[in-house]
Image (tube, rainbow, N blue to C red):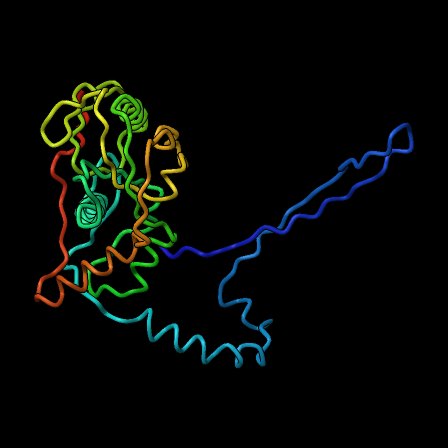
Length: 251
């Protein structure tokens, strides 16, 4: 199904009360939905479009580059999915190249993945659609008790993007958590690969903001994914991913 982008134009009528303090009071409002598609092309400024065309051509040359091939769609959905697993695994592997000591696990978020990877040719544009944000890879150290609390929050929403950890969930509660095949230790300091955005406690991950240290890499999550696809393509490999039971919902 084709999705149209649109904006709402709202008009409000306000009056000033003459009694006591002057206050603005909205007495009437209405809105109109304006679809942003080819129907509004007639209003475009042709001289401005001509000015932008060289920049658009350069952008298209970059964004339309084919960097790999996926024989099947690679999708993202909770509690775990082929796409989210692949992305988390790549971030964990990359973090272990840049960080000492060894990084124990990776934590990302489904909200950061904005589109599935469709079957067929993979372009730079398709990766930007999938990962549109400028999030960067960081490594933090976090007390196990805070990690336990965070995973309990994951269980309430039905899972999250992780690598290096296995979680069993029942009745929206984690009943078994292992990290590198060992039970989570609330007193241990874990090293976690995540994004700069999540390390600030955003998207419901307040416990990540309780980290004891933070190490930056300057590497965008999107670039990690692009590099992986290019590397696999150079070896003649197609891009595939799968689920592995790292997050299991028990009845």
